[in-house]
Image (cartoon, rainbow, N blue to C red; front, side, top):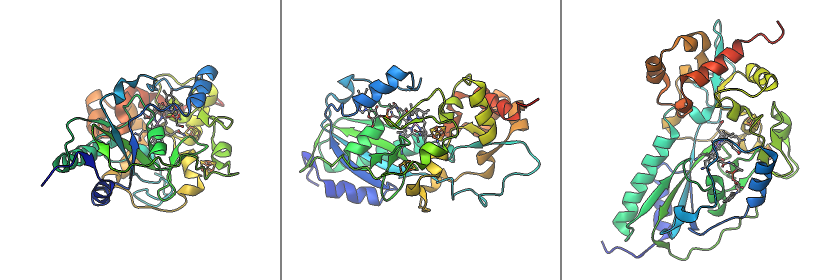
Length: 319
Ligand code: B12
Ligand code: SF4
Ligand code: SF4
């Protein structure tokens, strides 16, 4: 087959449809600073996550011409429990895991999908160099997805796609060849309207609606991943919501997630990965923790962080 010196969108879109990619879009590998205002605001207010590594260092896009951004659906915790939603474990003290950490680690799943796609692209084009980003790029992956025409940043700060909702992971393949007839996408869409369900439902009021940023000193997703939880107020909310890792609340209430959708079967969890038996968790050794939970993306901060949250859930705040 004759290899082309650029990529044809149709071929890649077709490939995506047949290969577990729920949505796919393209953008030029150019510097983008559209939302520096949001970032600077979050920084000044002290809201930024300690896990943020986005910066204005452009080395990451040097040598690349185009970026292919993908969305892969994961379970919506309104629907996709292994058993009925409300059948919580009886007789055990349990904690919950957010659905972004159900089933196989999404870093592995999306990297595999993107590696395969890179191989396919190499077979049809002159691509020499590529770079895969899943959670790791110093560029904001949500911003990449917006620029690729895949959705908008909701008030809960998640990327929302009109067809898929927000229970989607984002991955990107940077390539050194151009995409044929690439037009700029419209990035001004915003389908939140007057809705503020996420803002009002957040148990710690972490969403700063003025600039659509999170105060990660409050956000339970951040605080369940920190070695120490900031305040008693936040600890009490961890107890009330029972999150051992992550938080889904501002996505669960979002009207764009009110429909059940197909998700990648690799993210189908076992019941014991959704509801964690706290008494057992507190007794785990490093090796048994790894064996039981090491394949989950949420285990990245290690056993002690989960145990800290487990202990918080068992705390008696009134006594
Ligand atoms: C740090 C981080 C977190 C932190 C902080 C999140 C936050 N909202 O600030 C914590 C731990 C709280 C978190 C939580 C979650 N996360 Co997270 N997280 C990240 C990570 C590693 C960096 C994001 C970041 O820098 N945030 C800081 C804010 C300010 O930046 P931003 O919103 O990403 O980008 C905006 C601005 O920075 C600005 N901007 C644009 N261009 C530029 C350029 C420059 C130079 C600068 C400075 C700024 C800037 O515009 C951007 C878009 O409007 C990304 C992976 C990545 N590399 O992007 C995943 C990522 C955002 N997380 C993801 C997920 C799935 C989650 C959770 C759902 C997991 C869970 N269930 O607990 C929650 C959602 C909580 C929520 N309501 O947002 C997905 C998002 C999927 C989606 N549909 O949006 C990502 C993309 C990982 C992935 N590859 O799929 N996360
Ligand atoms: S992830 Fe949870 S704590 Fe964080 S903003 Fe959303 S609802 Fe609030
Ligand atoms: S709950 Fe409402 S305001 Fe929040 S992200 Fe969804 S549509 Fe937007």
